[in-house]
Image (tube, rainbow, N blue to C red; front, side, top):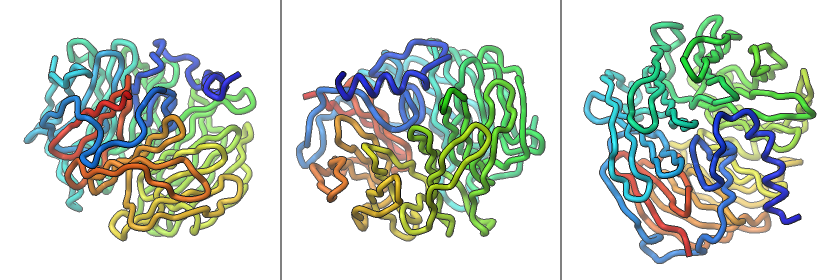
Length: 411
């Protein structure tokens, strides 16, 4: 059995219950098809010229930190133009727009961190789901952009206002769309993906900027939320709480933002603001601490990626100058640090990492626990770049607040 075949078999439980059969090369949701930032594509090039990989196309785009997503020939982008949040269906090979859905917005970020949407769309079958900065949850027809259903989460549930608007990305689990709404009695809400009707609601947990993930551990299905309060596991069928583990800063002016990283029967959490990182062994109704500290890998908002027993991620506050690190999963030991790297979106493919830094550099480096080995770097976009990358069918998609670029990575 090849390593790639073994990996696909391990990922099969994550794909169970999805309402469509995903193509291996699709990137239809935040952090990719298996929500871990890892691509199974092959045949991509190593290294690129000083100006970056060949550009297939580029186009103007509005403001926002929402990542592009791709399924088949469809590319969905979510951005702000003037006083409207715009969901746009485009051709993935050319960037040409096929339809647009625009809704008025008055969101203004009080900290000057941008007024566009933060949440990345979800493509499932013939539907697209988006969550705007003010809490507008939309389900649209993938081919036409027509509205299927809608919820105004702020008006309906009255959650506590977040520091930077709504930033979590919903999770599609079976026939349900799960959202960390953050309201009293509705910390997490499950909606029927087909018609938008509320299926269940649970907990009092405040909303975070982290996005949930699902995993099967010892035959038990968990949905892991890193809420404002910490790690929360729910039964996706009915919202019953399996366990919780408080993990947040003593400072009120703080956020949890990185997505939990599930590796086998363990889950890794990371946050800044004096909180730090921790690895926990998952049981049916509890977690057991493996290690925790505030020295290994304290991530402000970027999610780390696991490869062969090591975590690769960004340590440190964005405004204080973050650094790239490799950390041993089982111990938390720092193997190497690349100072001055900055916050960055990461994708791992064929044993190599691709990073788009907040400063607009596209970087390729090895998944190498012994040392940082950079292969290529190019300045490709403007500051700030905070949207996650997408990789589909040999094409890499990245954006800033003005431009979306598609690069061809095929050899």
